[in-house]
Length: 147
Length: 111
Figure 1: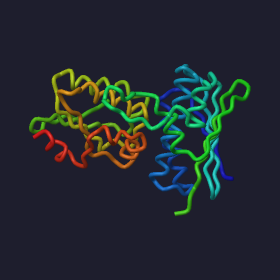
Figure 2 (figure 1 turned 90 degrees about the vertical axis):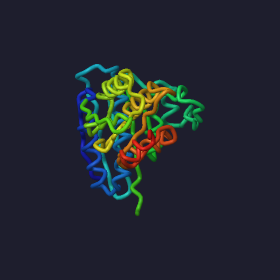
Figure 3 (figure 1 turned 180 degrees about the horizontal axis):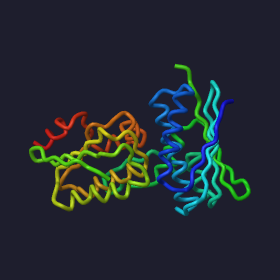
Figure 4 (figure 1 turned 120 degrees about the vertical axis):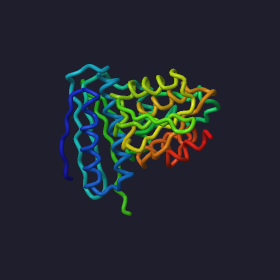
């Protein structure tokens, strides 16, 4: 597999730098623009979660993304050393629990936040979360399908 | 955040002059849109033609702004690129927002 490592400090202002690099690599690896956009979105949500929830916005921490790809898939290994993901969040992300399709009866009932995990789950083909010692390891895989 | 404002007929057209509406700018984005509502604008067209990417934080800001408009007014979208439309569809928010291809079509809804 080909691959590279990207690393940013835990500032939301750095997420877009990471995102545009990932989008370009996805296209290079064989994804179409829409698919690359989905993967970019998924990685933005995951890295933003690391900064906002694992690190609680604390600056000068590290978020690492190790990217690998071959003809069949793109794999992203994300690492941070922030707080572990709560069990309920892991269930939502990995098993899709608590994310049943909602029917909104009125505008007031539509939540303004909490869609990040659902977006990752809908756009990636494989999702694995592990707490490894003092770090979080989220592995996201997207298959590269033949046109 | 930067916006370009035009009044066309009885609608305020607000063009977003940013490429990415993401977590670091979403609070300011929402604050700016709600300020338009607070200043008495009830018919607002949000022109997203310069926006190439939006994440869930940006989407949340849009939803919050739509709520701020309330039942006495309307906030509609126009010019959304594929990445933005795909995000709205992925989260089923394409059923919540009125989305128009051009600003002319969007403005005509208020005639």
